[in-house]
Image 1 (cartoon, rainbow, N blue to C red):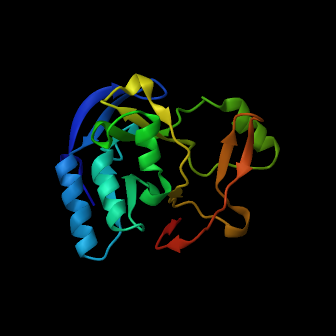
Image 2: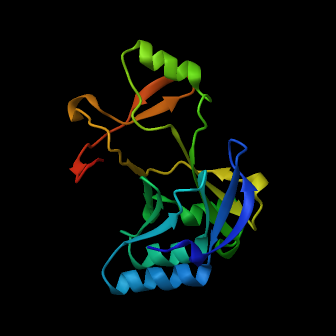
Length: 206
């Protein structure tokens, strides 16, 4: 687990125009961490964003991640943000193809992870529609995006389609047979089912 002191922190605006902090991970610290994990026969490195933030906005240099996945295909990167976790397998990101498509050296490319709690009321018609269908939201909507940038040019980010795993915990009492994660399908303005596993850990439902 990397804490926020492993990053450079600057003020920025979020996807929903909220005032947030942007965390840029230190390349040397990232490389050393993945090398340590490899020697320890472990595969997941996590970075923690304080739960008090409006958004988990994290920039990660590509080169250390490329080196890590070249050592082990099982390597993962995870963001912990309060009660939320989001992880991706580095082998699921076409890093070499990314360098070619962006016409840039991997040393000049960064991946940008954004997890933002959608402000209340943003999708009110959608949430009302779900209620009329007998559905009730348990946790707030989370906007999750992964992009790539060259030389810190955030205005020209390339959206990536990467399989990932999203985990959220709640103290709400839930019937696992009636609970699932869902994706907001903006094309049809409906809830699309996501493969879901529900479990209990202590007082939390995961």
